[in-house]
Length: 294
Image (tube, rainbow, N blue to C red; front, top):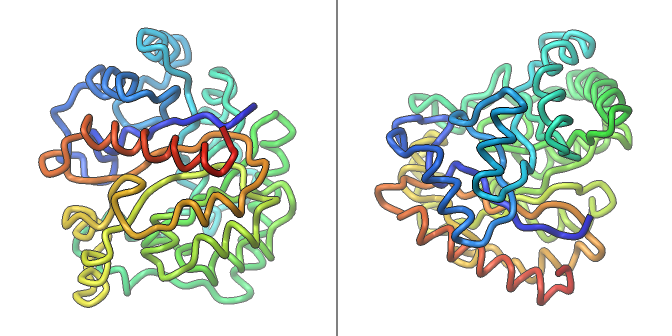
């Protein structure tokens, strides 16, 4: 496939703090995403999880399914137990023609807890990384054998947050495990998305375009905010509205093929979803075209 531009519904309705956009109907999200220009959507908590129903609601708005987040617990269960738990999600993605599965370890994550600051996240020890990587590789091998690539979503408040965490993940997993590069989470975590794109180009199979407001990021670090409090304060925004150097990042991804997804969680009462969707789509499309990826 060529590069296609998708969206995540988190700009309309938040999955981790459901009062943000809680009253917004799924149909409003899908209609506005299509109006803004997007070709596909990732899953959110308001989407039906039965294949025919999901296919029907997306078809009403001429949208494809991009993929969907899966909350893993590989630190506390075997690869085979994880595969069994993941089976309904994997089958749903397969039935809708998805090529990647967004995977993140959440067994001890704190990103959904407003009372826990980001400094309290769990950090893995070297022997834990080894076991974690072995289990993830087994899961990824099995998923890839069914035609769906596991792409790991590094995320604030989880065990894979920092650039060093991403390096550890990549070094302890096999080639079946690929990376979802999220420019916003990489930047907020103090990493360099340009360097990550350069280092892992051959293993990047999904791309989340999220920008960062530097003044809010510095405040979140200074005050040791929880992840959700940082989101409510406006740490994230759409590409082109923050400090991420998208031209430099995309220059490091020559030949990239797959989805590029605008995924920028904000408080919809402060950041009008359709306005920001249009802005994010237009900016990302321009960046991709300038990089020769469209």
